[in-house]
Image (cartoon, rainbow, N blue to C red; front, side):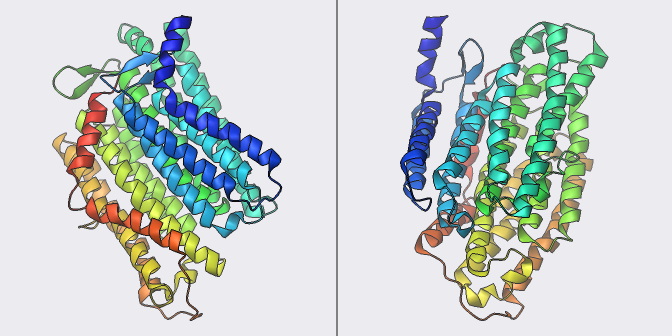
Amino acid sequence: MFLGNLASLRYFLPEFAVTATILLLVVLHVVTKSPKSTASGFLSLLGVGAAIFLAGVAPAGAGRSIFEGMVAHDGFAIFFKVLTAVATLVVIFMSMDSKDLGGRSQAEYYIFLLSTLLGMFLLSSATDIVMLYLSLELVSIPSYLLAGYLKGQEHSTEAAMKYVVYGATASGVMIYGFSLLFGLTGSTQIAEIGRSLAAGKATLPMLLAAVMVAVGFGYKIAAVPFHMWSPDVYEGAPTPATAFFSIGPKAAGFAVLVRFYYTVFAAADPGTGLWHLTSSVDWPFLFAALSALTMTVGNLVAIKQDNVKRLLAYSSIAHAGYMLMGFVLLSSAGIEAILFYLVVYLFMNLGAFYVVVVVSNATRGEDISDFTGLGSRAPFAAVVLAIFLFALTGIPPFSGFIGKVYLFAEVIHRGVYWLAVVAALNSVVSLYYYARIVRAMFLQEPTDASTIPVPAVSGAMLVLLAAPTLILGVYWEPVARIAADSVRMLAF
């Protein structure tokens, strides 16, 4: 056992890089006198960059179980490690630019951020329900601290409290579902649980377990009706932390959602790229209903929002609904569509939040009214924000359109026409509230004619986020191929 775990260490290098960076940040937090020191930000960039490099060069193969079956090392896990690390890298730049964090302990903030990243690494590769639960909590607890990081501000404190209450409730329900699965099978490894359930007939306990586990995962991806924490947390948290919540934990949530349900309650049909249910639990219909409800509630409630962060929170809920469409199809192509959509969503959503940081730094506001006349006050920021918003809507030739094409095409191919119709109608609705911001920027006169400066680093990062948002709308094959390879190397 010891030698096996020792051999597993070579596949755990990205996690080591993040852990080492966290420990160095703790030391830096102790020895640094000035809270305004940027050393912690640069150290975090270095650590996350090293993790991306180590994940990218790690041998993937067809997938292997490491650490006595607790986690998997496969192309699927590597995809999500790189994705969440890239998102964290952008958020670190965003945090260094944000005035929200001025005068506060920088090292402490980055410790929480990187601890969440470490949890996402483990969550995306967990193959044991004990490891799954521990990694989910490692994602959640530092996230609560990030949400309430603006100590002394009522909205931030409220955000943290609501996040804790909803998170604790969802985790409690989920672990009860895990206990049912352990009681039915006598195993904590999800592959063994799946094999045991396939031979059993305990329909009601399996259904209860599937629903209870869905509560925990639904909370993590902010699916309706487990979304109620999201708008208040997004509004009250520092804007860089809000941007992080919108993509990082959500991506890790989809990773574990696919790995768990496609292992425990389904089995792959060799050579077809399809799965079949191994129990009488019709979880695809359950999640199809959640998908339709999530995108509909997210888009309809977003219409009435005046705060841009809150609007983007409901937008994020709606996009979780779109991605759930691929999850319910029991096909490799459906999972590939989710992975591709997460990539394009990373660039367009983080880009939108980055512009919010730039505007908020200058105006100290986050309402749509603060974006009035942005086309004349900060033309570059206004144009790139319009690009991100149109991409989020799914308008060609932006990357969001291709992401939705992949999802819609597979839904139609699999014959779930009603879900495709609901998603198409919701995409039309989303155009209205995104267009409200564009209208305020370009068609309304500003009440304050002063220019809004865009720092060089912020401008460079916006270019780096806008470029793939445009390029992936016309040339997407490399990313689609990476997504397909990652799914093919998914280990069960």
